[in-house]
Image (tube, rainbow, N blue to C red; front, side):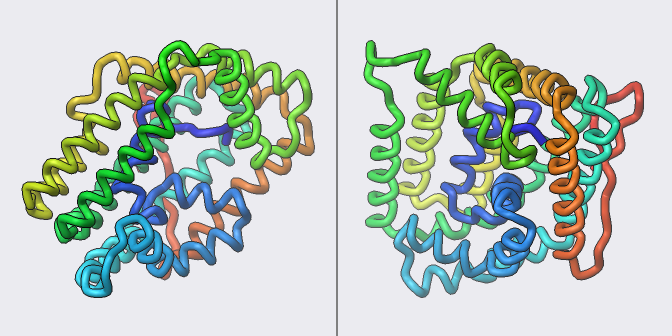
Length: 318
């Protein structure tokens, strides 16, 4: 797997950062995959302790009291139970399909199928996470809502680039380095030609930094307004789903940019995959198989839901 692989990559990247205010992080597909990068045993440890870790993260982010955590615990337990039963088989299937594509060679057909399958799994995880988080947000006190607003403001200050101060060349180099680091977790060190290839492809991705920041800020302001109005958990869940799952008011320019970035990701998979030497390919394939097996072992009744893409239709079935 090369870097991040959703079809609408930039769209997913924004939402994975904001999804449920980063609270139930280990419910999310991206976090599970991120834990997997550290090694299969760490993935199993992270999943096995996910309830504890999520509660600690929620407490740290929102400064919850013991009663709030106790009230949220049934929702969290239910979400994790659903995830283990319904989502782990799809994750195992995705990594099995990635391994098959890697062995056979990435091409236009299997790459479109795989990136679409990743997006489908992301949306399933997003729905689960928004439903689990809404009751927690609905129970925040006015002081906690104010603290959350201040944290959002601090995020904006950190992410905002003052007019006239952007160094586009530096930003492109940082983007390339992020992709290289992500790729090397799967393949081992890249050679100079491979790094140049990554720089070429990522350098042709659309620049969406300012538009994404503006969109995120607007949606966070709307969320704070809902919390201040004592919105119900049902209303908050609907808002989060509209925002993070269905993209109901995503600006068309960002939607188009996400599609363009998805095309570049597919190009990167195909072009870089063709350059891997034997050691790189063996490392990649070994990691993919190990992760497939790990997601199987995490299930009480192990099963794998295959990704199936008919030759005339790149839409996945997971």
